[in-house]
Amino acid sequence: MTAAPDWDPEATAALAAGLGVPLAAVPGAHPADRLRDALGLRPGESALAMVRGPGAGSTFRLHEAMLIGRSGEATVLLDDVSVSRRHAEVRPGPDGWTVADLGSLNGTYLNLRRVEQAALAHGDEIQVGLFRLVFLHKPARRA
Image (tube, rainbow, N blue to C red; front, side):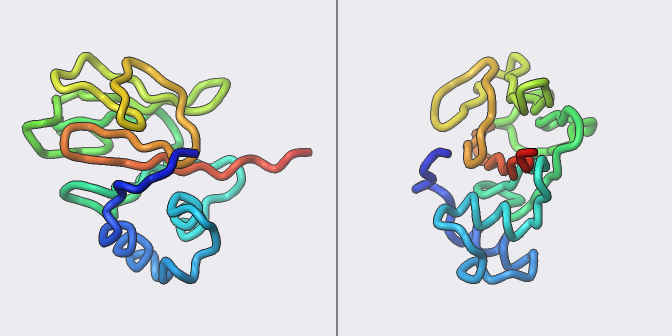
């Protein structure tokens, strides 16, 4: 999990408040742990939480591949000129979730590094244009 010193504290608090849970009351030392628990993710579930940019506080549960972009067909619609119509995609795979850039002009960043495709881990921050989304995941229980 990556440290998140650049998260917008107001957006993070608003997200938790929107879920009806005061952020301080949610267990977990890291904001990603707090948001994951506030969302009530079950073991094996994942989500994206927008923590910076217009729409901060929005959450997206991940069940299948999710298009991020400016296009009306995008599941995560980011209406800003810094975002390509089909900017990136978050995809499930046999080893977990990945993010892939779809040939965008401004690139897709994972934890401040430009990526073409990369595996996602709980707490990772995806930057698309002016927007920042955090990948949240609750590990499956071990048998």
